Length: 324
Image (cartoon, rainbow, N blue to C red; front, side, top):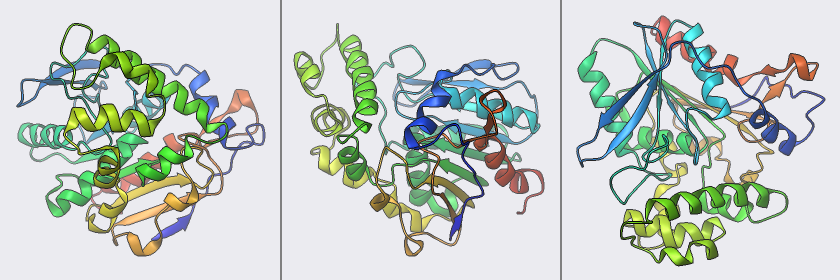
């Protein structure tokens, strides 16, 4: 089902880029009582988790975007909102994103769902009676939706939400090579290049590290680095196999997707139509909102971060009462 969003953008943040950039300029207060946990993985690697302070109650996993971390602006915002609902938030860092390089050469990518699966098994083993949900932002939303489509009724989740998802990775890569969106590409690619150079400074890489700075678009980086690190034939194969769009029709967990038509990380051609969605998925579209923006409010000093109200509102029916 596709519905129209109730989001109303702030008049003082006109356009997709203002909505996208504004939140990143601010510093949100830490969520209460954060505690770190290192989860050892079956392949002798690890991921780092960050828990909010509540000691009991439903669990909400938060998945971040490309090169994100618990220090990302949306991380503290949503973790604080989760805590305020009386739930337990657990921020899952993808491999290598918590401030320390992971042990294996491989890292994370838009379609890597194995680590999320392992975390869910771990949580279900610890507390088989507890309700568990997940929220994914951008790349994390793609991972989440792909996972839901892969596992269907065996997904081990009670309800989920995803924001600003790059449904079609190929379309997204092309969009980020045009106009002002090249700014986002430059920022993210530079971070990826720097992290790869540092990680493989004293260990063998499956690609020529000296060429990293030449691969300055997502198409080049994903072809030469992401694909080689993770066993894909090439970048196009990676995009085709890891885009979440083909998996949407297989989702059985109640899922809300929040998306803006003006998202500068992709075009409207990437947005799925109703025939591509299962009956468990609601795609809530707004005309504006940018990429993980959705800022409202009458004045800058009274900004309203709509996502942190809308996402818990959707999950609440499932986590607190078991029904929507």
